[in-house]
Length: 239
Image (tube, rainbow, N blue to C red; front, side):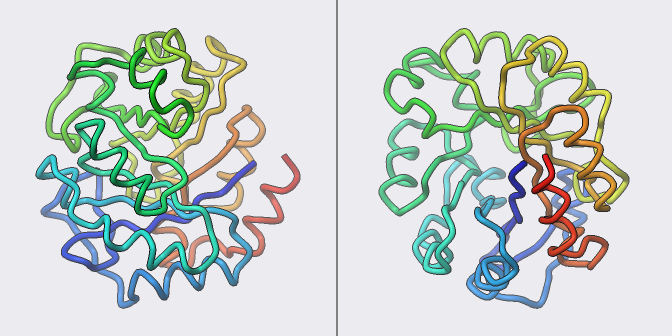
């Protein structure tokens, strides 16, 4: 099981939102490059970087940070405001190993089939779930698709790996939405599912492993010390 320490960026600073609410932002006293180096030193194998300003405005603004955080030696998956295929190219050219996209896959042409044909697994579909539906536009809008309907569409286009975030739990340390992930993995047992939102303890990682998740994103839990990186990585290695 892979663990993805998160570096969420707002105005160039590392921060976390609560439930995706930009009015409830907490900034942490660490530079993005410092956070990346710390995560690499702890033994993590990936970085999860989110451009919150990009997600809000629909245009990425922090792509310049990609080579800086990648210099820590960890592959970077980057998302936030990527709503045009050329922006996907920009992120990949900047050094990300894959780009996370949500709205682009549901709201625009060329659509998921053509996007998979062009980028393949270099796109990680971000399925953000809010009030039982897939949220779009930096969680400010909502589609008509349920999470399972979204995965069916995307899997039909060729995608096999998915980032599924529980928006109501993101940044809350209230525990992951196990029911959501169990339901999706029951319907799609062969997909690779990365869980995000609410993960607070090593026991949460253990439970996500038990139900079949292939990865988990850790954010506030690392910055506020509710999860020890060594114990988390040890638990994940058992999966």
